[in-house]
Image (cartoon, rainbow, N blue to C red):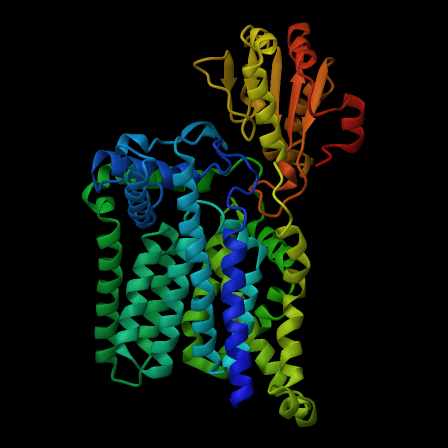
Length: 559
């Protein structure tokens, strides 16, 4: 690499990291919902860390996920608490309060600043993953220029950016998984047992972040058998040592999964049953769903990444074993499950980015020499190579305006603000105190100790012979999944239609579409006033946008 090209390369790599950092810390309170809960899984990390700090115990007591992310959170939050003690924000650990959850994505965050700190921890692991992906691509291709493409793809990827805004485990698990694959690849290219053992340790840490990342044992095992031309006896010894390092890394960072196994097995089996029995609205052909999701996120990951996996094996042989085996095993593991979530396919998407960089380099090498060398002396790098790097970035660049839009409350936040104003207004509060209210997931937080409110996962779960309700609060985060698949959920749609067609008032709270929002579509919330008493509340504090039943039925869930 000549001096101008090296300088350009360093600038682009620095810009990749800087842009990745900015996009991941930008609008951590994306929907302006704090102190109310946004993501239904955030209490898993937050409440567990608060429990360990307040109880001064290393036992997380929560095992549906392994413990490493919770230990990281506990350290970060305790450091934040100590800083708060200095500034006078906290007097004791009792000031760190848990999230009170009522239903999926409905809850009150006890200490919002600590949740933001936990989200910042996720964002940090997200941006560090950009550097790890660059390392993987560099070790794979031995080409610094084309190793920039995967780093840029990850830095600007809307899906990874969105997940980096939440206090959830997936971005942390992918960070360690990337480190595992990169170290394994480097172990082969450098014939280094030290890197091989580092790969095993990082694989154990990834598994300690999310159980199914134990699939990385396949990549580590293959690398142990292939990384050096030695006798099979030595290879078997390397395999056993790596297995021990992998297990030790997991046990050291999730010790109570083993120590308190009886309790831990209950949580693990609950998660297994969840995926085995299905998740409402997100079940079906997972292979097809994941392929469609990757295509919507960035078609280049399929157009370049999939053939890139074949090119990787053809060009690099055993050096590509960790990448290929991990991508294949994870895709099969996710695809055979009936439940599909976007976050589950994240490791495959990230590895496809590495493969896309390899494919771009392969295409460049096949160009005629005059095309490859044209303009290189004047610019310091070949324009043809720059074009092959920039084209796969187009879908991510097109998503930038929406990612960078100014903060705006989601529909869920707007509905919450409406009810908070009602609780603070004496005339509306008096009406509210006498109402029977039903609310489902992805709606607003109403204190059950203060108001007569019943929460349920979905309004369909309400007993048919239950008490009549004056107000029913529905969340698009729940019901939109039914309207998107009417052939499967016709019975559920019929129930919702009966509510939307019911006479009475109907307020719609909807934010603009936001790619950072957990449920996107602005987090729409519908408030139905089914009785004269309910309508009195609507008239006492009119807000939002009224929508008649007929207009709703014409647009069929217009979100």
